[in-house]
Structure formats: C-alpha cells, structure tokens
Length: 568
Image (cartoon, rainbow, N blue to C red; front, side, top):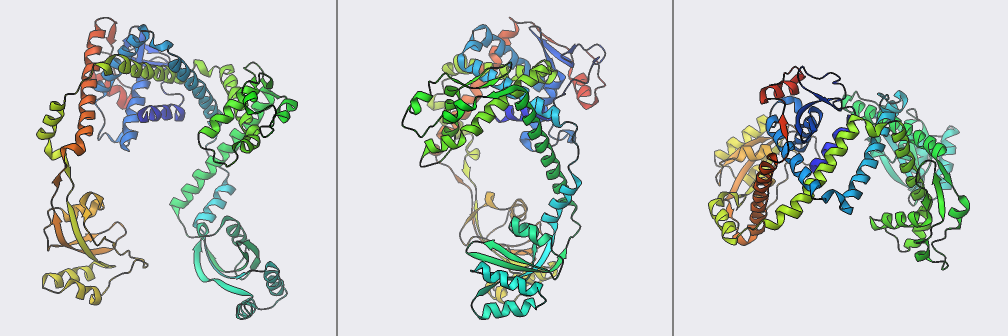
C-alpha cells in the first residue's frame, strides 16, 4: 500500500507524466502519449509508468532520483512490471475483476483520481503566494520581540493601567504598583521571544506595536494581560523566508480551490432545504433507523446521481465510524449533516466537471487507473491462487535460524557517561586529564568550559543504565565503534558541542531466542516462497500471452537519463 500511495502521489503532482512525448523516440512506439517500453497482450508498459515506479523506489528510500546512487536496475523494474501485468491478465481471465470489492475499489479510485487531476489543473498556474501573506508569515516565525507584561485577574484593572499609560503615566511605575498591591502578578520581563513563542492572538497585537507602545487588556485564561513592547527585530533567515513563501503559496492554492468548489456547487448542485431541515436525528420519531431507509431526495446533482436521505445517513455513520467522539453521537450527526452533505455534493460535482473536461481520457488518468486495477488484480490472484499453496515447514524455519544466527542478535549495549564542553580545547584538556588518571567525577566538578543543558552549547544527556548501541546518534555510534570498557572518546555533535565520553561497560550482542523470532522468520520464508511462485507463474504465462520488449537495457538507461535512446 505504501508504494501504491507513493506512485499515486507522483501522478497527482505531475498529471502530465509522459504526455509530452508526442512522436516518441525513433523506432519506439507511442502509447497514450508516452513511449512504450514493452507490450503485454496488446497493452503497453510505458516510459511514464516506469518512471513512476522508479520515483516510488527513491521516495521510499528518501533518496533523490537524479543522484544516480542507489538507482534501481531499470531493466529489472521493467521485468517486474511485465510479470505483474501478466499475473493481472490471468486474474482477469479468472473473473477476479468482477469481485464486488475489486469493482468498488477501482470505481472509488477512479473517482478520486479524476477529482485530484481536476484540482491539480485548477491550481497549475499558481506559482507564487501573496507577497503580503508571505511577509506576514515570515514576520510571525522569524520576528523577535522583547516584551514586558503584567497579568491581572480583573480585566477592568488591566484596562485602567492601559488607559493611564495612554494618558502619559509611566508604565513601569504603574506595573510595579499593581504587583505590589496584589492586583497583578509579573509576566515576561524583558525576555526575547520569537513570534512562534506567542499565542497567535497575542503575536498579532505585538506585531502591530512600535517599541515603547503598550497594548491590552488581552484576554487570557483566568484574566487579562497588559503587554509593552520594548524592542523588536527581524533577523535575516532564508530558511524561514522559504517556509513562509511555501505556506503562502499553499494558502493561495487552498483559497483558489475553495472558490472553485463554490462555483461547482452553484453550477451542479440543488439542495432541497425543506427535506434537509426536516431531518432530525435527535427526535424519537421517525427514528434513526428510519432515516437509513429513507429514499427521499435531499439534493440533486445536475447530470449525476441524486443524494437521498438514506445515503446522507450512511455517510454520517461512516464519518463517525472513522473517529468521531461524542457522548451523544446523534447530536453530532445533527451538527454535521450540512458539512457531510456539502462534501458529498462537491465530490460528485467535481467528478462531473472532470469528465466534462475529458480528464478521464487523459494519459495521466488512464495510466494510473490501469496501474491501480492491475495491482488489485495481482493481489487478488496471489491471495486466491498462490497463498493457499504456500507451506513453510517448521524444520525450514529452524534451519534458517541456525544458518543465519548473526541476523538474529540483540544489539550490544553500553554504559556511558559524558562531560560536555563548548570548545574543543577544553574537551581535549579534559580527556588528557582522564588519561593521566584524573577521576571522572572530580573533572565533572572542576573541568573548565563545561556547558549546561540550558546554555547555547548543548550538554549531552545519557541514561544512567545501559543503552542500546542502535539507540545512540549515528555520529556517536561511529565514534564508539570498537570501544572497550575504560576507553575515552571525543565526540562533536551536529550543534557544535564537544563531549568527552567514557565507556564504563560494554555488553556484546546476544542471540535472540528462536521462539522470539520464529514468526518473523516464517513470514520471511513465506515472502520468499511467494516471490518464487509469482516468478514461476509469470514464466508460464509468458507462453500464453504475447510479450514483446521493445528496448534493450542500454537503450532503456539512455531514455531514463534524457530521452536520447534507440530501440534495440
């Protein structure tokens, strides 16, 4: 399911994959606007589909496709795609495509895909967010404020202080008097804070102040606050600026889709308000069960299926099944009926609009829909034909465990302690003293340059007991590789702090009992048997269905690297 999602995400982000190749590489056929790499029983395996599979591979590893490192064997990926298509064809010939769950899943996917392509098309021309929004977001996240505040339980008292300051009286003197009289308590006093450290409503007020100005009373839990801005700054933070611009772009797209949704509702949807307002899920009569069978039409979609009361009620039930929490679910039904109906109508209207624009005939839709259907059929075939024949004997599980004991070991553990320093020179001096025989605890109390967790340089916090090697940061694991009890090592963390690490105890890896890993080994052997069975079935099916591969491995690599490729 994860790879499938990544594949679909790639389609949603690039709806025109493969559509740009109108003529194709010399000698290579074109299918659905993309170069065909192979033909299986008359259906193409396209270059666009292969690129999606490779993109999914890289996304699953967190790697970038253009790096070259870790790129999967393209010819091997193409061969697996052909095998999957062969198995899906056999599943179709067995009638597995007519199973109700397959039909429903394919229909749901196709509707969702059409809508997503439509929404992508609507925002395709939006490349930048509103500059004013981006600037506001940047100031909110990157802005720095030094404020003074006092907190009142009585908002009226807070208002008196603000009025007095605006009349020309001294803020500091008034704040001290209010605290001394018990009418207020001190809040932040000259502390620098980022905009993200403030509540949004407070940040919005502070951002509008000039240094020396006072605002309030601001409602807070249990009272109100008066805030005085002492200083403000806006450092240059390119990363924060980029995030703000990305968020502004997202907001602009969301707003464009909201307006588009409103236009679709106006164009396609008609709600029977009398019927909708008459639905009362709280009323004892006619009762909730009766609404589940109510065939009255609550809304019509021009050119599409109308929404009945029964369909609306079913949608509400599904919404609650997937996570609504309320001591009185029926009251929540009543509150949500408008929202759920609106969502149902928008989905149907968007699907109609997508069809009207011909998106159900676009290369991106046809390719992704075909791929999804084939994956469903492949899975159905494996469950129906292959899985029932898989048998993993207990002796095979035990033999695998004995032959691969190194794969079934609990990671080693270490007991460590650390001294943390802001500068390497101080860390070097401390480690030299340790190696000269100084006691670790004596150095903890006397070594110069040590840092605390609250200081700019970060102190390294280690558990007092044993810690698994695999739980340590990667850089620290590397530093401690091969260490023995009593060794000292020097470690620089990513933040630039330096740490003297003393190894107090080393516990080597221990074998995991067979009973603990038996199920995992059995599942692994089942997967291997399943893969082998699929390969054997695909080999037999190649004799039944016509398969023609149109590119050789070298030509395939050239096509992937830039499109300059030839047929074999």
